[in-house]
Amino acid sequence: MEHKPTNELNNILENTHPDQLNDFLRENGRYMADDKKGFYYYFKDVIDEKSIKLKDVYSFAGVSESYGSKILTMEKHTKNRDLIIRLCIAGHFTWDETNRALKLYGMSELYAKDPRDACLIVAINNRKYDLSDIDEILTGQGMKKITDDE
Image 1 (cartoon, rainbow, N blue to C red):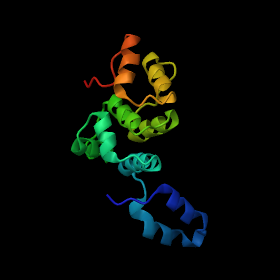
Image 2 (cartoon, rainbow, N blue to C red):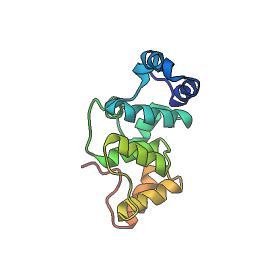
Image 3 (cartoon, rainbow, N blue to C red):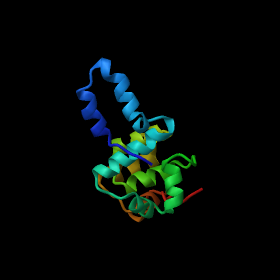
Image 4 (cartoon, rainbow, N blue to C red):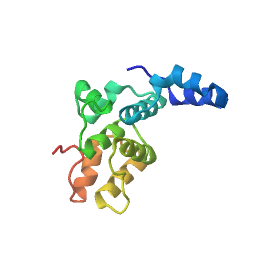
């Protein structure tokens, strides 16, 4: 999938006049987000910024490259919120980045008043990116592991 980083588009837009908008959209339309591409482009921008490879994200999240790729590009849509959270954790996303990714995927954000989400928020805020460490935190609180797929 072709990709142009958001910051590159931002730089172009800074110097674009309203009468140049048609040219901008024609030249960059293939990089623009639609409902399906928005999540993928955001996810890709965040991991690119952190110099993390997609194949490593899939590996750390415990999914195959082919399945992970289909989830990220939304070729296959999952209802498994934990899977999206695992991908975000594997990509070293912050709490805000994770929430934005969940929202773009059409899922509810991590919610501080939900005890399990609160555990995940604490793990993310403390840069716990190892899923087995997060599973320990969750099971220590009597909650379902992040790696348990339904």
